[in-house]
Image (tube, rainbow, N blue to C red):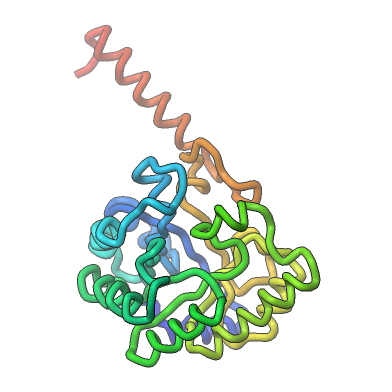
Length: 257
């Protein structure tokens, strides 16, 4: 049965953890969906894990739409959320509406995600939700701002923690249906989770969030490098290398086919 936005809130209230992973193509999306993942995020992390860029910044809206289409074709049950990439929504509310509208119309995704809790982003979330576009918010470490923030943990000082808390509350009030909390102290994530009615999805934010998300390439051991808060459950990179090496050897020795 397809996951709905309303179910996510019900699961928070019931204490049922929400499972989210990223996908960037049809095959992976199909596997994650069959495994029972609740939210499949077409994250702009595909810039690095799928397209070979050194950060998320270069990926374009057209590229996100292209990959989101493939992901949606592989999904029957999970809620598909697509990131709006860098500079596809920051210039104005109108720009954000056009970008988000294209994503929903062209891909089949159910919602979009955008980063930041500044007043402009809160206004954008309010305007998008007012016209029926579901928005997942994202505060803490926001990778599209890495050139200013770096990749270090956010919210470590009382001032930073209060700012992130205020942003999360304002984004929830603006109509976001869920919020990603990335790389912030565990106790801050717990306070935010308790203070707001919408689900919190943690990544490097402790185990008191309402759900967890990982970049699937990190979970599968496909990434050459991964953040310290990620966990690999299998070294798929090495398994693939071994399989290709075995195939190469059998072909060279005329053992295959």
